[in-house]
Length: 514
Image (cartoon, rainbow, N blue to C red):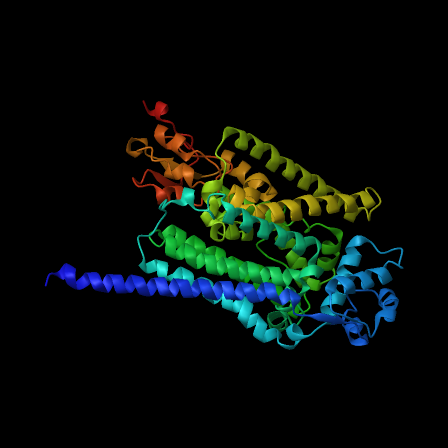
């Protein structure tokens, strides 16, 4: 019997095992998501003195008193409970919409009873944990199937990754999630209750919507990071940078702030630089840091040094990639969860023009707002007064929530994975200016080897027509480039290389060498 005849059944059997494993993983993931969504209807709500007391600290004592007539009331619908809560709190003429939303969230959360409240740990395991395990089981067998790297494989005909029906539905689901998370968290309070066991374990505090979001965010980057390990296992650069974004998200963005909260210290993501961290210079944050002893002063000094020294110096040596593709949480989600949609970025000249106008407009907005914040803090509000608060609210709503959250992530399946980074991130704008005019980073090209396949341009998440530069043998130095390196990874001829070198000759063109 020939060797081929001996090996063929084994290969087919192995492929069948991988298929079964992936289908099992998909089934577990869908089951976990079904339990997660189903948990929205697993509670009724009973307002008691205990639930009101649990809400103290989040709601003033005076407003707690306004809710005393509701004690003993039982509601089978969260909508009825919310209506009753709002009707009583509206008796306080001084309450604003934000304060009302916070009160409704905590009151409803603490009033929840029923199956969910009695089986929180079990339902947490059957939803979030089960979906995570299912996702990993679906992804891992791919390391034994086929070759690594990007292959089209009918991607332009895939409903999920080519703006088809599934992609549109997925985008709609993400957009809806962010709208509820930012503005109506009390409608998804049952989802947040599921995170209580983890929050109590790590922070010794009940979960709020931001802990719940941070937990999902971190797990998503880990699971989809494993997918990146599998997909780009041929490239050491991608293995290391994916490990880096997982490390910084898990350690710096999730665990360290949570542990600081457990110790009753100011919570801070030490990698989140201004102006991406637009609340750093707000009066409430400055007052918190200055009143928190040596640790608070260290955090204040570190935040200033990070923005004014570390960011420009690191960008000079390594370009934007050190932050946007190795450290940033927004970039980490874009590079992991958003990777299947990178080919959807608009490569047109019109998009490039809009990009430059929008991202620099947001930067100007952030600088003006921050200047007002600092002046208002130093002058004790005597110069700008309430105008600073209004500008903060506008920025928080339009940029921090609507742009960075709803559009920035919800539009992955519609406009690609770097919509926020490309059109809105003010820190990316600063990094881009330094990278373009004063940096050692560039992507070098070997035009003589380019076969014009177009892979590099197709998969550029920042909408850069990489092939145009490669065909001419020109170095690629663009303010928008985040140095993800995918263009080099998908080039079949090794035409592109990410390099750090002397500033002289960065803008090398073929004509200059003739």
